[in-house]
Image (cartoon, rainbow, N blue to C red; front, side, top):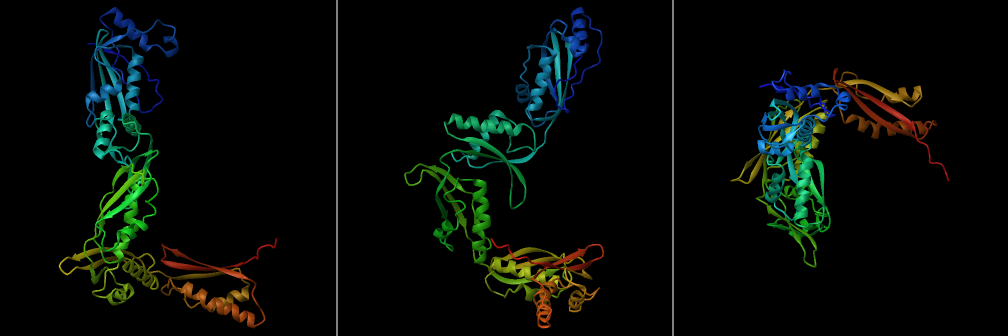
Amino acid sequence: MPALPGKNSKSKRRNFVPLSAPHRVSPTRAFALFAACLLLLSHARAQQPPAQSIKLDKIEFKGLDRVKEPEALEKSGLAVGQSVDIDAVEAAANRLLESGLFVNLSYKLKGTTDKSVLTFEVVERKWTMPVSFDNFVWFTDEELTAAVRRKLPAFDGTAPESGGVTDQIKQALAELLAERKIEGTVQYDLSENPVDRKISHLFSVKGPGLRVCKLGFAGARAIPEEMLVTKSGGIFDNDYSRAYAGGFVESSLLPLYHEKGYLRASFGPPRVAPDASPECRGVAVNFNVDEGSIYVWDKAAWEGAAGLTAQELDAALGMRNREVANVVKISNGLARVRRAYGRKGYLGVRISPVTEFDDTARSVSYRFGVAEGAQYRMGELFITGLDEVSANNLRGRWRLLPREVFDEGYLAEFEKKAVVEFVREAARAGNPLPALKLHGKISPDHRKHTVNVTLDFKREFAPAKP
């Protein structure tokens, strides 16, 4: 059967390229006239009579996977048995692209004017980014998902990273609010999880009645519920946000338990509901708290450590056997461990902790994976902002010689002791230095594994008098 040729798309989308089958002479005069009209230039076509329409006997899609054919057909706006011209076909192709479901498509027309087959060949967008509903406090997630699926049957809790799918989700949520006669405006943002740094599509609603006026923590015993409420100023008396509330308890409330040795304490997802009582007139939010047990410190294992001994590392960490496993203290101890490495020239040390629980003894051990990196040595010392005599005087006080193992803490000690004494001696000798401020800076050379140090003295100017 002879093929109907397409025409160049009017769409500005570069990824839309309608494909036409090679033109052949039609067995009917009407069909030949129609094909000839399609091949004329656009300005010439404007001078011709209106193009003859064709009747769609079949509409098919090739390349569908997630999207089902009825959904694709609905997005196209076409129907079997409909009479169309080539402009209507191109408009349908543009509607399919604008739906956000496809990253690319082409079409082919085959058949006669009274019985033609339209084939769309599509490339679907990948649905990989999670979708989150933030503060639709009147609905369950299942109700929200069902509302979105009425508009997007392919919705499964994810959406493409870009394209028009998010616009359709936003519209579906707006229609749901309107159906329930709930005042509010749907908003869309990209959101980053502060824990795993993953990006998601976040939908929220802006409107009245979302202020958190009740807050509770069921199961709180080791830390009184009243204290948790007091520490939750970021949640209480502000507009409710599930994303913020969940992140807040993880970052601000969970450390209160970790500091007391409740290393396996956890907060459940927020349970939220509108509260129209006179004392609230907003949103009530409740969390379930699973405190778990108190754990005590057992021991540390240092894997990969060579620049410092296990005894030196344990001493820097500062944890004693059977004391409460205070995560804040452990974190401060690791900072001391890193400083101890810095004093031996290991400027890029990385420490990865893994916890090992003994639930019978209610104790915890830490396995620290240590990647020490290269050991750095002293490079050059630069002194700026002083006269030559003073600079040489100060240079003679610097005790780190070139190629010696670099001590990351030495610069701060030098500033506090040697520089202060240098200034005092100059004053006692009758050569007081002007008011200077020292800016110390270290510059590692990661290729040579050396560190250059700059002592930059800048004159301090007194503020002008009014």
